[in-house]
Length: 103
Image (cartoon, rainbow, N blue to C red; front, top):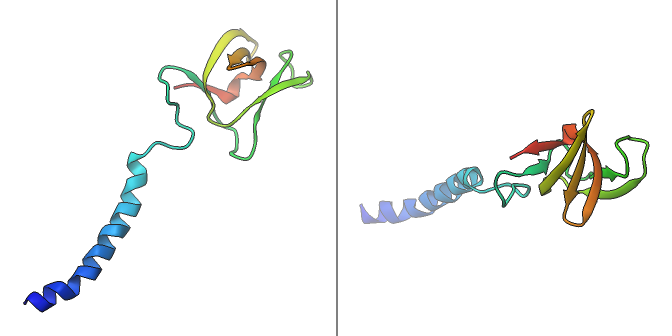
């Protein structure tokens, strides 16, 4: 009986490791989760891309900065027809409002 129990330990250990690997991500925060609560953040931007911050509320205006996907702590200063005047760290300018969400 004891030999059968010892023989099954590697299989039980492997099952535990696999179960942990599948369940653990459900309880961890994503790389882009906001550390601060009740704030605005960048959303809908691919991981390899950035959200352009512009000098005026227009897609044709000069780019004055960039926000990484998941950037949080964004302060909204004004709203003009779907464009948001924002401040994030040292960056200030206009972004398309569809890429900003409240978290």
